[in-house]
Image (cartoon, rainbow over all chains, first blue to last red; front, top):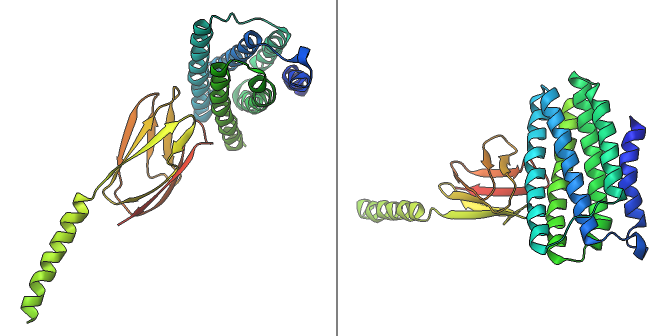
Length: 174
Length: 106
């Protein structure tokens, strides 16, 4: 399990370190849009799994908020790329994120009760940490369109809130 | 003499009461880009706080002492009449990085 969490983090971490230092490692706006949208979609799917499996009030409330917030951000992102006439472009980071997420979902699918709750919430803490690091250090600095940069920056603040919320739920589960 | 003195004092008290109720204010706090602005408010008992959520995600204004818990869907307002004096720290349950403080005096 730890290795898989680390793997998921690895996909974004690679992006972070390859980031602004090398010109060829710097993602383009269409790639950034795709990565950000994919990262949001992954968290929506994780929350939908939690809503099916969990019976814990706080975990359910957290998961419901993940669905509504990430859907709201992704709707904004879709409206923006449409307005800017940008086509989000699939890339290795997005592919790797989706792969890791599918593995994680399968793994969490085998758990139930408080073991599921704990694993889901711990993964939410780790996942938001990684995504927020990638946004802060690579995606936002690399974005060239000011409106995209602005939406990513608002997204970062929302997701930093999620990270703290997840930490509170994790502490309450102990 | 005492009587004559009591008159104006009572009158002054009434005036003061009238002035204090007339003074009841409506104070707006905006929740925008994941921050409460202004984050710190000084208010009086009887004042009304109006939180305006200008973000596209839901927020709450949740008192840490459990006194109140306001749920604000995207682009909505919520009102609260301040009924007692004291300092209340509050936060958003969904985004605990959003924090505010209201100091209420008589």
